Amino acid sequence: MSVGEDADAAGWPLELRGVTEAVVTTRGPNDRWNLAALGLFAGDPVTARTWGRTRTRRNFSARGGGFVQFTRDAVDFVDAACSVRELDDPVLASADAWVRVDSTVVESGTEGETEWVEWALEPVETHVERRIVPTTNRGHAAVVEATVAASRLDVAGYAAEDLRDRISFFARVVDRCGSARAAEAFRRLREHEDL
Image 1 (cartoon, rainbow, N blue to C red):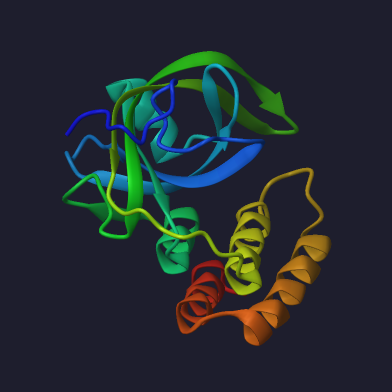
Image 2 (image 1 turned 30 degrees about the vertical axis):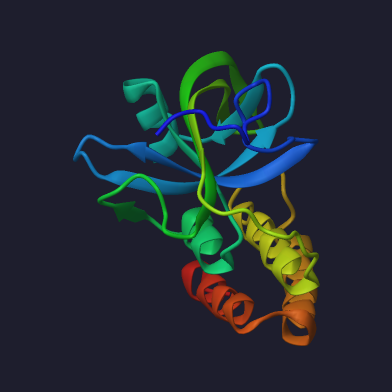
């Protein structure tokens, strides 16, 4: 697999703007691929932050990279963000596109009591699995926003009550606007986070 015609000049298969939510697989010491959510910050280079002593941080440090994936599957996103999921293969079946990246530390620090590391992500290999017609579904977006809020529940500096209110609001949006897959993702979010 190599960089295809769909990749932009920087080697990414799409234009990144602001923060793009993706998932990443990184190879652990057991040679399995750990799945996690990862926010990509547009720029040159594209960067991402890991918060705390996560498996992604450990694996980026030890292996120097991983596979960034773009998926529309809400269940895969929730599982990536809120559970420990290890895979035999680095690329999800639901990935519409993926990028194998090299990761290098740009900066590190502490916010509140949480350590963070900022990583530069350099594309090495890019592949587009599926071309899609983009749609805007409020239910799917609500799953993503609720997952981000849930991932911050135990982080110092965030008000848990405010986050739980946000999650409740997004639950109502999923009930009204979400697909069956979005509803399943929200059920799993509640299960993973004991909501």
